[in-house]
Amino acid sequence: MTAGNVAVATGDTKMNNATYVRYEILRTFRNRRFLIFSLGFPVVLLLTIGGANQHKLIGSIPFPLYYMTGMAGFGTMMAIISSGARISSERQVGWTRQLRITPLRTRVYFEAKVLCGYLMALLTLVVMYAVGSALGVRLDARQWLVMTLLILVALVPFAVLGILAGHLLKPDSMGPAIGGVVTLFALLGGSWGPLSTGKTYVDIVRLLPSYWLAQASRVAFGGSEWPPVEAWIVIAVWTGVLVRLAVRVYRRDTARV
Image (cartoon, rainbow, N blue to C red; front, side, top):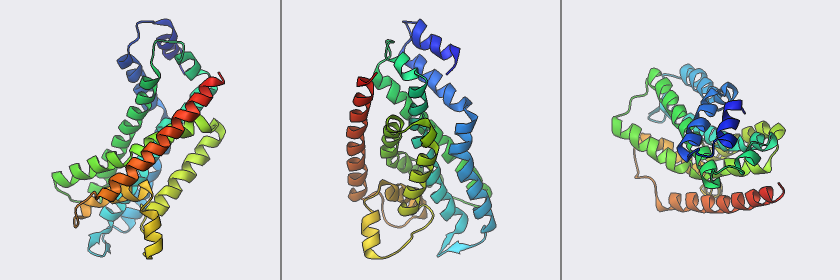
């Protein structure tokens, strides 16, 4: 938290919502560790593993395309959860307490977190697409656009999950917790390929939002129309449940202040 940010939050009663959102975005993109944590790891994986298998096929699908779509889901999930989870460190230093005595509405605070998460997710997608293109991935404009839009929709429950984590966990445990949760979701959801093709396993993972995030990224493969009604239901249910939990822990948290 910088002195300039404190001044904006506490000294200027005329601060508007757009001003706060702008400062929040600047803080996010100036945090090098956050950028490396959210963006660097999936990029390195795509370069090393995708590059080493550049001329291989998964069925009829070029390996770089297959792996790029998986890393797109994994990387955007990491970016959007990490953005919301930064609430934990802000709570520890008293930043959220300062904001609650300003004219800034609580809704705007959370909207700024979600917006920053989506901007980081978009940045991740741009970098992934650039690396994938360098490895030989070729899609038409419609395929790139549809894949991007579906990924952004499938990220909604993970944006709420990040906010929930920010109010539940302490900064010391945040890094391992996010890394473990995102890796588990990505692994079970199929971002790195299916763990099993058994009917029982598939029926279970289809209840996870990470499964549909992976499927959203793989719309670039063509084939059947996506998303099905089941995808919308799973995403909506997870989002609704996580929103209720996030509201509850936020109220409990603020009641103790």
